[in-house]
Length: 212
Image (cartoon, rainbow, N blue to C red; front, side):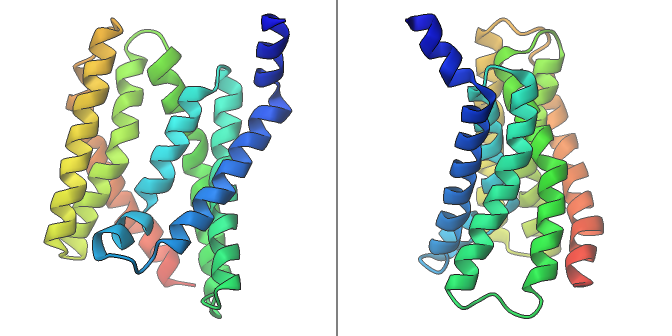
């Protein structure tokens, strides 16, 4: 009976349906939380929030391939949930379709990567686990740099950088306790990845959003 239950829980249709449903709820919730408080507004209007949850979902999925596919579907569903809520809330303007398309493409690129990263941190082998940990935290650090260096929101930047540093420390401690090889690569690579993410967000994503 236990093996049958485990099989059903790991069935691709169930896993992918669950990640899609969670993505829809996440997108809807992040839209609904806008305007409650300035810091909460920043947190719910950032790529970090969606991406960290995508990595968490990847960590819960047993199959690496399903974690990758689940990451893609979850990010697409999150965009769908967010912009559906925006439409029903009357805030989906004339440029909304282009913005939704840009974020959907970004989700298709980042979702599989973060789904893989979450899976690898928990179930991978060798040095790649520490690299995956850095991939997971670089998004928060990168957005902290974007808030500080590009938007000049110093308070928000300090919060995001602090959360990114704390998440990096927690993942490093987890990898060390799990016996991961060269777990120290996680805190070494995370700031480098954060800078790379910031530059990509500033040079590519902002450019695409500015053109729609």
